[in-house]
Image (cartoon, rainbow, N blue to C red):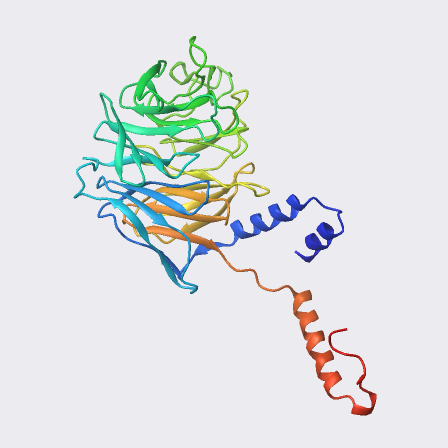
Length: 403
């Protein structure tokens, strides 16, 4: 660490290198923090969580009980031990509450005054955070598995929605209507995700074992369908041609730069794809347990070198090297299956929610002081002790402390 600091001060290294090194160290030291709790509000499993990107202060959670909670993650108590308090709740007593399980919650990317939730009650609601009332309600013909707002869009305000129907719905926030349908899948759409690099690029995952990448400006269909065998028909059976997995594909996540796309399936596999070409990079993550019949919310670190993937795996969260496929560690602390996790890039923290109704905070261990720092402080203490023991005749009595 001192080497990085010295190189940065001397101008030999870009400051980003020091930041990446420290971010990587912090991620590798993630532990369940005994001093930080999150208010337990949900009476049933937690399906989804989201941290807003503007201040990095507020977190949303949606549960199988239909309840939505907003938490404040900041510690204003000045004490080491604290609880992240629930600021407001759309509880069972609210007339606006979802009737069934909330599957996805997401903050509006540019303003914490609004968030969006979707549910198995066949609705997607756009909420006013101040009043906790829905400003808009979209009705669908089937259960809503997933929705997503683009984190970078400036030219459109579309929400992509995956439902029990094989068609992907595009809803416009400005007009409050469904304006477009993307057709191509043959089963329910379990996950949808906008690219964080190009605002018109959308990835969708379905129970038909396929992942499709779309440019929503085109009317001619998807750009390409991901193929786990990279077009090698000798390795694929006739049924497995152009499939991303051998089971249901229930998880999607772009890397922070949008260059790669990760997918998870019920074949207990996770795959890394080049998002520009659709090529399977063939990174082997081994067996990644996945028994979920619904969307699986996993996440990727940002600002590290190398990057890491955090995937719910039973009652634990598995941490993998993104490009090596190496299992780095297993984060254990939940008493039941983990359904979602979210990375906080500002502090390199991880939050996970599960069927045990708990949200756990995984926080980096505070760095121990380096040997050089300890030696330096010991030398300074010794020098101070020596100076106090010097004969007064040899002490400097004429220069002031202010000089």
